[in-house]
Amino acid sequence: MGRGRLISFEGLDGSGKTTQLDMLERWLSTQHISYIRTREPGGTSLGVEIRQLLLNRPELAITPLAETFLFQADRAQHFAQLILPALARGTLVITDRCFDSSIAYQGVGRGVGATLVEQLSLLATQGYQPDLTILFDLDPVQARVRTDVAQRTDGSGEQQSRFDVEAEQFHHTVRQAFLDLASNHPARIKVLDASQSPEVVHQEIIALVGQLVL
Ligand code: TYD
Image (cartoon, rainbow, N blue to C red; front, side, top):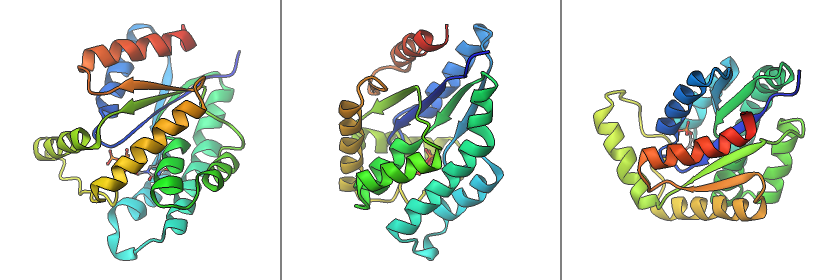
């Protein structure tokens, strides 16, 4: 049995990743392809605890460097406990975010340094990188509108996270950091125009994923 494949979905909050993950899951089922869907932060029991600290505890005043290490701790556990064993079994793994988020948000957005965060990430993943990264590119203003609407209508009552409340400039910086990563890693990172209709985006995703798994 061959090694499984790892696919990550990246982009700003509100860029439509979750809707597209749901649609991709339905497509994988119709193709009878088994897979694991997971996320960072929060893909393990430890990760769930770290996620709470990172997103919902503003009173902790977590510093940029501490924030960086917390995301990496989540990732180290996630790769060791879930992702790498699944890949070794030949399973397809799809993760909502991976280390490109750390490079874009902490490395560039928080100013910790892209190279440093990349090195820490590769330590956390034991050198492993996604086979395919799908980047949902969207103007932060449009992304903002989508998150606001979702928060009003989904009734989940999930609080706005530390990242949701950042100023608009922060999200512009993070978007550009993602685009720079994509131009530096064109074979791995594919950029999608997330302002298109969900059905069009879905077809583009199936074309990319199909190349890897069919
Ligand atoms: P996510 O689960 O996508 O948020 P939500 O449930 O609100 O849609 O991710 C949580 C936040 O964490 C998101 O704003 C991006 C941020 N993040 C980082 O800053 N660095 C990282 O390494 C990761 C994985 C996420």
